[in-house]
Image 1 (cartoon, rainbow, N blue to C red):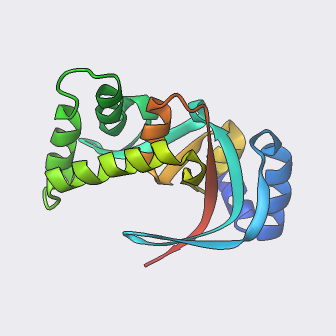
Image 2: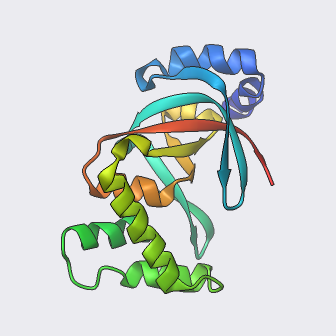
Length: 175
């Protein structure tokens, strides 16, 4: 009940920015000029940026039960890049199985190449690193941030030992 009410309140920009400044001050919650971020599946609009410790960041992935919220380090994406960085054997089997099961239309080798290219780009310039978070009451109540775009980037950040990540809380999504 409390979260339902808070979800309604945060959809009113004045209250959202006021509550956010107070409840998320430890995360450098700040209002920004509206930002449109184009991603493969739509356009994300944000009016707030934050800086979040990675231990407060969760990812949403496909699972046998639909979508599941998990810790970054439990994702096949993190497993792949972490094993690659730290030279473990068979770095891509879980990631390959995940892509094959939930995205059979995607060419795995091409996806893997894109992931590795992203990793190399982040190594060269970590200043461009950011993710997009879901705007929801749980962020304000439990200080948990769910990634809605940037799963590969946040996995790379975690594997590199980065402790905080810049993010945008998304106000709306358009196709």
